Length: 101
Length: 235
Image 1 (spheres, one colour):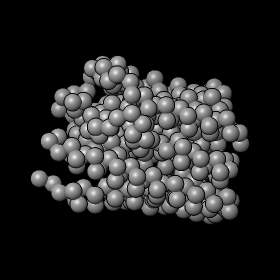
Image 2 (cartoon, each protein chain N blue to C red):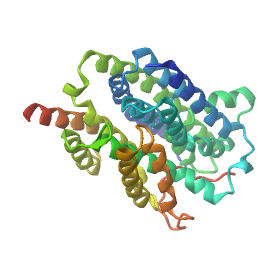
Image 3 (cartoon, each protein chain N blue to C red):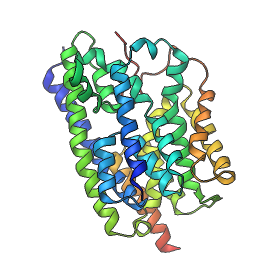
Image 4 (cartoon, one colour):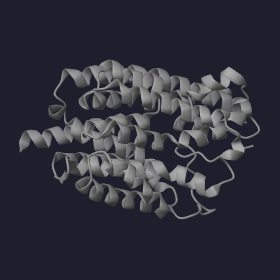
């Protein structure tokens, strides 16, 4: 796996943090529409990532044990389980279904 | 009046819970094909959980480096807002601000902003204690997860099921925000349609247009979600 993406991402993440600390605040705040969009961006991107990583294999929709993993995660999140417990249970459910089918 | 030890205890508690989550990042990164060193560099120098997960998720699914970095940085744009919100609380100058910048993440910002406005020293304690404890634990856990992910077959371990669950954990708290569910549902639909029709890696950045479903303004009566998406005073 190439280093280019890793290094670009590290530089970009730090640049974003520096921008917040050093840019004149008036460039960023006092623009409700911009702030609203930036606040909602993670929601859109993460929902896209949940959907594609749960349903796609390459360019095809393929239902498998991953969906069971997501279902288990939803139940545990509703019950306010610790984050790591959610992930371990989702992996275990996926692996178990694979083992049984 | 809250006392400094209570703030420290809350911050360290959050640090341990969130830092341990680095285990799943390390394991998923290894499963996506990144080396242990690359995985650790992402946690040390990138240190933005959501963006790290996004990058390895897209690269692991065969997406181009450009879409992976672009999507991850779109997700990280909120850190610009966070910096603007915490810097009046921290009261730092010059290079110290450059150091503090590295610790600007959801949790350190949320904890700092949650402190009473008339006690900036508590906000500073919360920011540094949360940021530093997460930094240390997140990196240790990343290393552990990467070694684990390298040692076993990811599919046997069910790590392909852990990936959507990991993104769901990051998404969960944001669904309660005004417009959150609408945006999430539209983004998921767009991502699937784009995923089956367009080249790998483009589905997620294209799903970003779903933010338009959030409407123009946040309702004044919206629930407080400071810990996830802080919107404090810009004093």
